[in-house]
Image 1 (tube, rainbow over the protein chains, first blue to last red):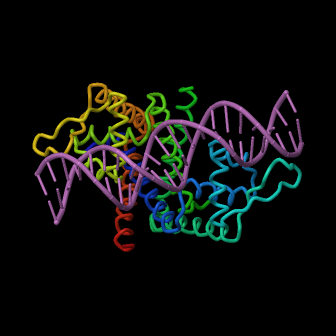
Image 2 (image 1 turned 90 degrees about the horizontal axis):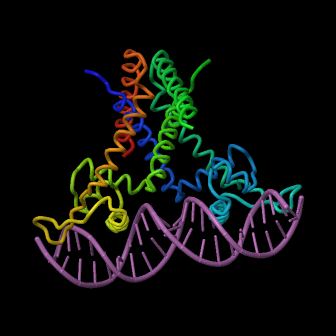
Image 3 (image 1 turned 60 degrees about the vertical axis):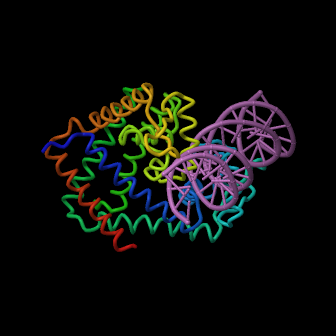
Length: 147
Length: 147
DNA sequence: TATTGTTATACTCTATAACTATA
DNA sequence: TATAGTTATAGAGTATAACAATA
């Protein structure tokens, strides 16, 4: 029985889709959308950020950030604070409720990872990660060739 | 150096995101959106389908399918044919252009898979797929417990 | 009476372009 | 002159609810 490259890729994508479905359950349970969660995650990771920085980090337009922040201010997850040195800019900051949400997100992610990979042999994990690293490195090579 | 389960999961997701980015390049090169590609892929896999069936397969509302099919009829990728036995229903069918597009999609996917996994040792591939299968099986267990 | 697809309406995410306030 | 964010406008994807034609 030979395993084709396409089969391997499809299994990776199947796993990823299941993880995505899990995230969506978390989101709808908290009446939150993916775009807003992404923004909260970013602010949680980078700390208070200007909308400009968030637009760059999320790869969307500044106008889009305005709308997402509007929604998250409305739901009480973030606040707009004045920038200490640049009066044009605002700093998007997590509220207590926003911090709680991000903490829940992180722990839900860690829980899932632990239940998926926590019981596997150390050797198996090592080999698995090695293969992933090889593949990710190969992607970088492809991008160089492609562009 | 210990590898945490979260690190493993994040690498899987990183690979998946790169694949997704590759798909998006393909889509924008063909002036196509993910939702429409998904519908075309489904029709390619299942053959001519009612809009009802497509709604169920894609997990979206029937109304949504109406809009997607409208767009794909406009771009010439599908046509609405009358259902042979049920006069309420329409059958969404690939045109020649739609079939070409799906064929391109399949070969692009296979190409990427070959470049990512084609040169790896057979042993490494076997171990990798085994771990993926273990993890996917574990997901099924989680879902049973969860619901 | 139930089902298929459409019209009506609305919300979220996304984009570009023009504008205001600052730098 | 350039930059940060907003208003204006538009389009795609998504949803529910009401309705027509057909089963």
